[in-house]
Length: 186
Image (cartoon, rainbow, N blue to C red):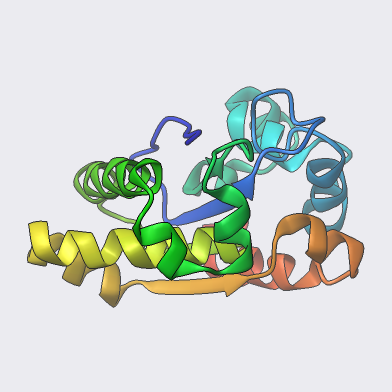
């Protein structure tokens, strides 16, 4: 699991399904991020870099990006990842690696809850993130009902994987989310 540092002022969290070959270790650092940056923010800077680099974001006039967090859930080489993509939850429940990954993500969600008190929306990209998130919330219900209830009260948007949105030219959905949830003047 790949995660970036949590931002206290974060209001929206984008959870990207997996790193692409040209992402250089950071989500949306490559071509997909560049396309998203152009379409969503009208900038020729990769969306991931804008979110990661505060100085670049401010220079580009997008101070609201501090309010959007971005993380990648998978590297794509996890042994359970192909089954997760196919949506085979029964096969996954028997895999120890997947169980440990759900545990780690559950702890990560607890950290998000405690540090990011202004978070109100989570945008999940890709079926694999949808399944992992749902399993982590179920586990969280067993461990900490209060935190699980907080996540259940948030708006959770489930979108196709970023590469699918870019390929199908439906990235406008992301633009609408950014404009609706984190207007540039707020």
